Length: 235
Image (cartoon, rainbow, N blue to C red; front, side, top):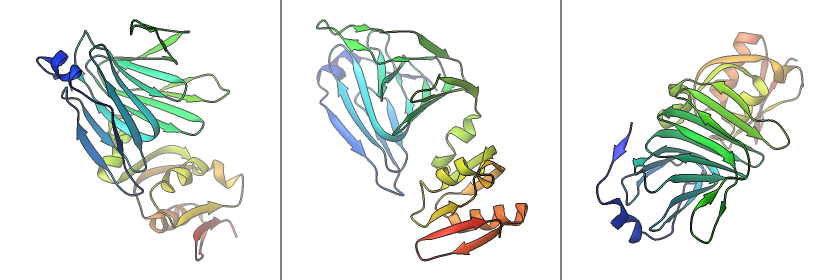
């Protein structure tokens, strides 16, 4: 989806820094002064910095779907960790965790680069190589590792907006970490080999017990409910 807007320069000059946040289990959609829409997943925080030259959003944590209003004169830049995602008119998802940043492009075109420096003139100077994504591509950047480019279905990238997690051959360890984002009744596994079991399916967020029971029934595991957590075990 490409959004268009007239008189964007006026909007930018009148914009102020704004911060938007969500708590655990909360989602929020905001419309910025230029018509761009931000859909924040739970436990997310962004800072919006618009002026007459640029549109910058800093994602400090969490996950956001960006639907960017088209404006060639004012690039739209998302800063997440030590990476930037630059777009004109496009739709994409950025997720920021402590040691990882992921980008999924839904429509349009974006480039991902190492952190840009802002000159006094307000122009951007790229420090080193960038990666340009095509719709359906997914880029994962982890600390100390080379960026990994893959493909990802749009419905999987935005499943959280429907209260779902879509897994497609995902290692159980990663699946557990994803499910734990939405439920304070945390899942645990106590076997490294078990964490490599591949899991597929569509699961409801905020219902770790149902997820645990489903996985246990498929793989012959046991579910042990305790006061503060749920444990998946072979025994």
